[in-house]
Every structure is written in structure tokens, then in C-alpha cells.
Length: 171
Image 1 (cartoon, helix red, strand yellow):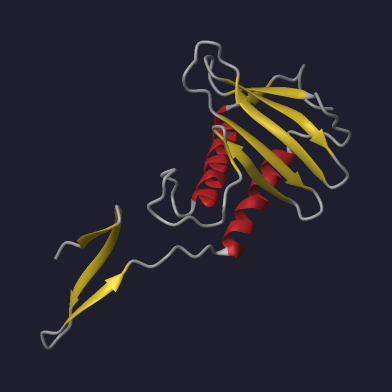
Image 2: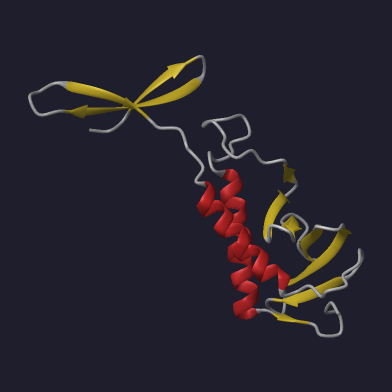
């Protein structure tokens, strides 16, 4: 049986009808997303390890390296901020032909905890750990996890197909 959608003040609430043996119907509300912290931290640790390959020991703000994924797609990783325990990186597409879609991340590396966290993606920042769904911004309930998974996939792409311009590499 398909889920039943109810409207309440413009919001949609999904209720699922389930028939128990004996003919009694039971209605269930969709569960809220609960973040799994150990899984999220493992993802952030893997992203840190991958991004750390592009950094030298003495990085300073303003340093940059270019990763050529294809002949048409080049990404620049720039160091924007360096502190004692953190480094902030900006990752952006450098293709001049792409006016409308310019993917980019701002990522903070926490060296003491050895994790990387996406601070902003596509000009959206300050992600919450969990969002109610639906919401006005149309963000997923696990939006923070999804953007960190996107960074992981981008890093896999760079490791598999990309190469670094050695003249611009850090160090």
C-alpha cells in the first residue's frame, strides 16, 4: 500500500499504513534522521588523509596547487588561512568557460584531531548536523554528511584521474 500524505499548514507529513496480522491497521510516522557520529568522523578522517597529501609542512596562506582532472577541468586548491591547529583550504574549478556551474568547497583541516570538515559548498555554509524535512531551503536531512561524501568522491576522482602540476605544488 502506498504511503498516505497529509497536509498540515502547508507541510507534508508522511504516514505509512501497515496491516498487522489479525486485520488491525497501524500508522507509523517517518523517523527523523539521527546522525551517526562514528561514521561521520571516519569519513572526515579519510578526507583529511587524502587532502593532507597535497600539503607540505610549511604551508602559508596564498599557496596554491592545480589538479588537472581532464584537459578541460582544472581545480585549484588554495590555502586561505593557517593557524596552529587548523588550515583552511579553498577548492574551486578554474575553467573560465563555466559561468553558471562553478563547483567549489571551503574545507577546514583540524590537525590535532586529524579530520577535515567542509565549511561551505556551492556558496552554502554553516551546515547543521540534521535538518527537518521538508524545509524551506530544500536541504536533505543529512546535508552535512552528503557534502562531506561529495568531497570524498571528488578526492577519489582526483586520485584516480588527476595529476598535480609540479611547478605549482606545495613545498
